[in-house]
Image (cartoon, rainbow, N blue to C red; front, side):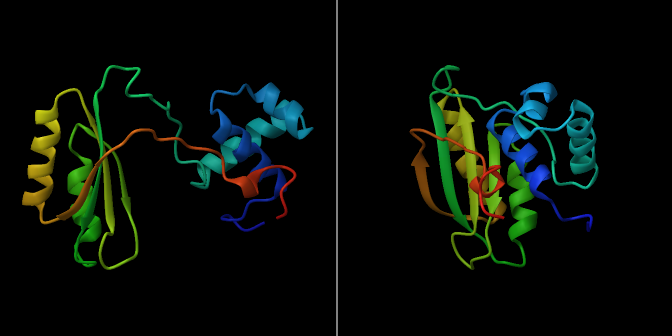
Length: 156
């Protein structure tokens, strides 16, 4: 198997980890019908190959008392996109930055802050950085789910 390829077992393990990264290895092993050691070895291999790049908690910002959860839709010159996105990512209230291949609307910045002034400061920083803010949205809800093709009974 090539280093960047995943097989059916890898995908099943990834699906379970995407559902809940804190799922015990024994539960994953039971679900995919292999030994605990096989799951541990597969997870280690996926981490070493860069398929799994980290684990994180999903936070409900409303429940955490953080009132301002925003999405900034920005545009950048393609030649500057990654550098500008990285600069913005370093701000403390930024939780995610997505870059896409299109020529406009190609940088998405998600940020959380307890005070609206913090969001205003971020908007000003984004503007000064060279990104063009096209839209700004207050996020009502942000959910995630595992990639369906990793589901054990999905077609490969």
